[in-house]
Length: 118
Image (cartoon, rainbow, N blue to C red; front, side, top):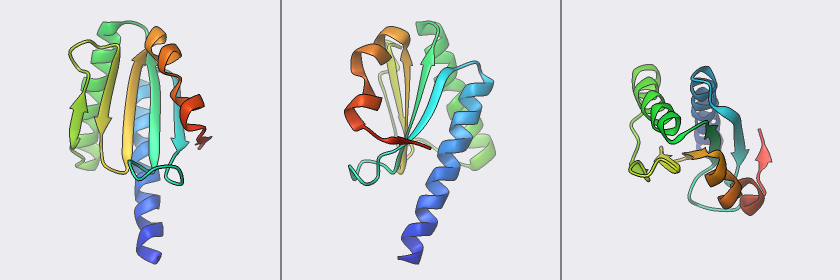
């Protein structure tokens, strides 16, 4: 039980670092939501909107680089990098979703998961 709490705290820390990196790179509407009580996929989702397909790619690249440099974190998997409408970076307990505005509106993950913003 104590170990689970520590892992969840580490996941929240990583989610908050990811959110800061995206915000620093001018990502819009950066949100961290807790989803661990609804799925085994992750404890937290980090959501962010880029201003264009190019910005989505730049956000994903910067996030991957900075998390490796600052936290020693490597993504387990990256999805959607080709189209840049929705790029997903899976860090295990933290999954980062970077969208264009149209992509975020279409998929509506905040509504779908109904998570509590952290």
